[in-house]
Length: 191
Image (cartoon, rainbow, N blue to C red; front, side, top):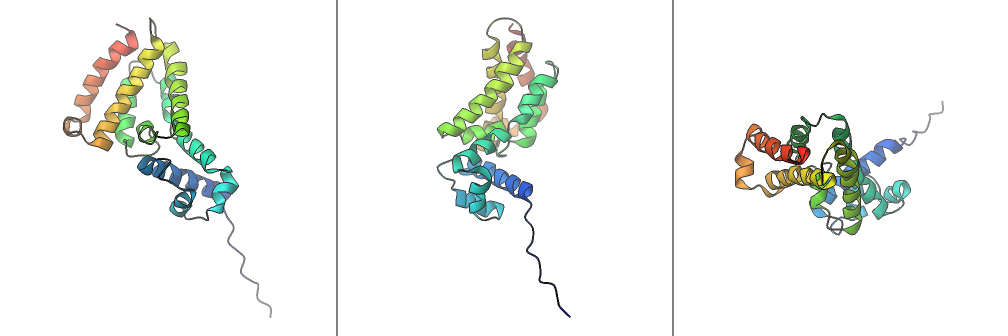
């Protein structure tokens, strides 16, 4: 009686690709571009380094896609959320996800010591806040006010989650939210 030879386990390309992207986001947030190699990414994803090049073509393309992937939530929030609720929704997302999470804008901003990552983060901020939020505002300096809101929310997440400043870390979410609502009211209305 012949026995069948065991088959090689089949790779799930989509799962491998996602694992590489997740590992890249985490390592970028922790170590930046210069401190992260494709070998590090592959090891964190539990795959062979050659798969980085198979799925992405280069380290730069992997990192660009990883950085861009983390910002979709801001894109949809700035379009779909009523303006009155937007500051708190952005703040809640920032506090829920936190600056240490590589898929949050603040996590990527802290990794933006590289021109390529900076370009991706800048493009996504401009899309979500300049192109999607600013047209919803009235009055002068709409794009500036939209970017200032992004800066406020991102700054809070970085200072609270990554830097750990005393007052922001000790403050409860509602207290922070009340101040953000007041700041945002000026930015959203222009008054």
